[in-house]
Image 1 (cartoon, rainbow, N blue to C red):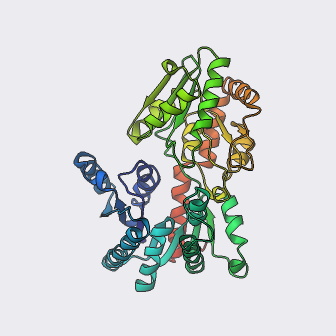
Image 2: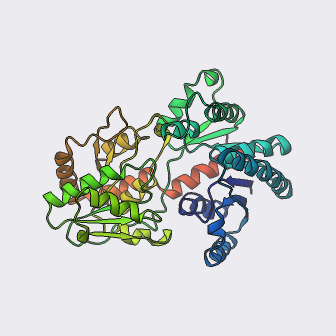
Image 3: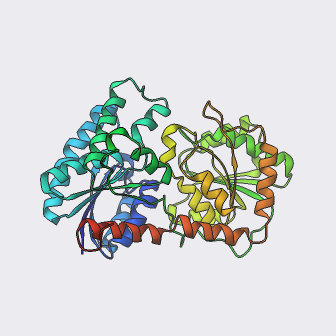
Length: 404
């Protein structure tokens, strides 16, 4: 049994932590000894009911869960504080558990994991999730000439050069970092594990009731071009008088209402809900198709939208944009979606919106579309496949199995 210390700067009490940390570790812990260190938002820790529920879930899964408070402001000092004291605790946990591998989610977690590797000799699994520094620049928070970006790029180089294995969400991401000049002579071993979906929670319904319902799942801020989603919804309602829009979101309901209203959407045909992660699939089953637009920035070549697997797992085709990870290639190859082009300004080109909506409606009404979407989800985003690949990497790094 491989002994693993998993470090995530994303909290287990966050929806993303529940979908992209807990779902994996619950399965991996059946075969490996897993110690988990997360950084939780203060408001999440104050929800004693949710905290108690998560403690029960991790205990039942045989996950040894430890948590620290996540500090937000001022950004750099707060993060430095978390890294310093997080590293101390992580090293202590690694020594106590005799961890063979330190599996780290994203850059901050991996920087902590690097200290664990240096202190204990544990192998470092850098689960990169994306190009963090470039994401901050593309989002407008940092400048490429500024100190934070230059510092993070130095950290990125250190992580790539010291990683015993790298996991990327996309094939495009691997191609990108393998082309970095400093890695041309010594590329780290790597695997592609897309953002996986627990397909036992997202299933196609036996039948979908009319009227046609376009769905949206997840965040609406930052990268997610919801103002353009709203324009598509408004035009859909004009073309399909009975169509509905269903959004499942936590914390962004005011933004959703504002953008939809500004786009001229009839709000009587809109439903906006908040749902625990394990019940989101029940709402997804009501959706005939899903929509998501993401800013097509350079950094997004390494991103894999969680909601894509959730839509497809529920048997719903997608309307999306190109320039993000492997989205265009995957939707095109599996014939499960419509992809709109993007502009040089980082927006979705809606000039051919009517044609795209018509294509989505046609696709959603194809007799075998639900099965085709489900097959694509199982091929691309299966949690079981993701868990199996992580397990293979664990065995390899701990020298308990064939080399990857």
